[in-house]
Length: 373
Image (tube, rainbow, N blue to C red):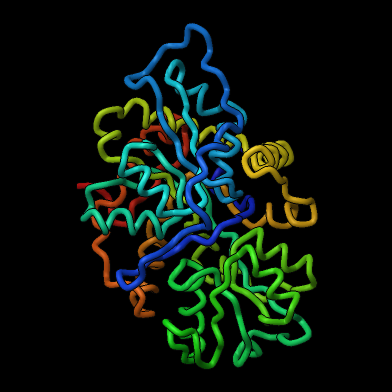
């Protein structure tokens, strides 16, 4: 995709629930704990004689999910390493948001690709001292999919059993907010009310659907496409509920300490991210194959075409962190009673990204008033 079209609608797939942890909740995540033993996808060697930046190594965390396609492809294809020169990329993969935040706080990683909710949690729980959001990576990829024999219209959802990935996670909050806007009542904690909200791990949601335990699900990709492969139909794409059909699903975060000590390295990673996103959007088939190959290396299993292909179209790969939608997602959780109103002032530092974008001739992005002063 050309520079002028970087923000246009191109989609990839999502494979993870992105939890919006409230003060009243104690867990959020994408699955199991960190899985750093399988972080070798790509791992391009440093070019001989390449000039080193201010750090010997930059440790980058990400998930083996298509919502993290920028990291998957950028590492697999050596696009980050190219920008870093003699500074080595040290990748580490995770399957849970809290694990990645803990690793960032401990210095086990320096930069991470992560969902909006763990980023908000990591920032608020350390009173704004641990991290900054420095860029965007992906938007969208969440759908309401239903049993067409039981649910034919949006109004038919009332009285049915609909799965979400986890109490208080991003999709759970979005569904609760949608229910409230329909004028229906549901107790957020129990999930009981005019709709039965059944919190179900994405890994078992397809089996729950096949058994009839649920009538549908508000879930991210590729779970949505897996359900469609089992006969479900898409009733609503969450992107249709957002301005410009965009909402954040993956951010880039950095340790404030690393940002302060190695701004040249952070800028190089962001330059690699921007160039990776441009390559992904300009080379869709190659990028899809690269991402799936990385998934196969990291998880031991590639996504089958009947899941990968439709899921791939569900996510936009973008540079903009869509800061206004982060605030809206937090507001929805507060409205649902799952989150105390957070102070997000200063969570963004988009100055390095905007420097990169300007140099590339691309539009700068905004922090919705939540940036560092």
